[in-house]
Image 1 (cartoon, rainbow, N blue to C red):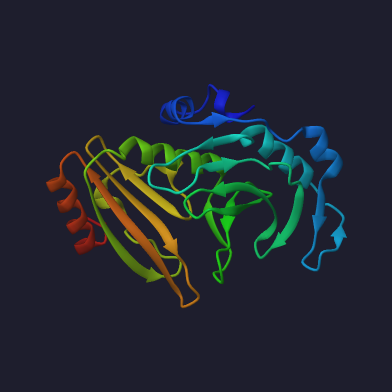
Image 2: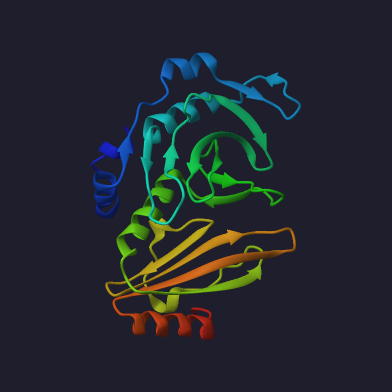
Length: 232
């Protein structure tokens, strides 16, 4: 079932899908079955891995044709195969192009298990989202808090370590958090850690944004996070 009409999604995501997300035609399932192919790095076509066609069909059925804008980003987020039914090898496994990222204006890879990954420039392949649904949840939450006062700072940490530890006791928003984004929120404040860069020097570069009902509270939250690393 396409996620836009799934009654089982959480209330935040349901509001987001209703108010902000447009739906466009999806790639036809019969075409996917007929034309799907697997290509190795030298361009040769090989036998499709087991379960690959089913993974592409399931992704297109669930997310194909969705698009939405996030204020401040140059292009829309788009989901679906968009007629490209090629499977290719990545350092993390077989993948297909299933997401167009509007903030980077770059296609993202979807692994057969549903994780969304990126390989930007000379950086290594990196899992940004545990699933497309988690990706939608993180953007739904971002739009929910976008009008709140905020304070922003950057942190550089060793590869694989989070910028802050636990959001200063705020409840974690698990459904919106993945490899490239961590969210915490209560009814007055929110903390968003976003992975901006992962160069080959063994560091991760995160942007930490603190939202609150007042600018003073947002500034205090950011200062506390800088001082304690979010462990308080």
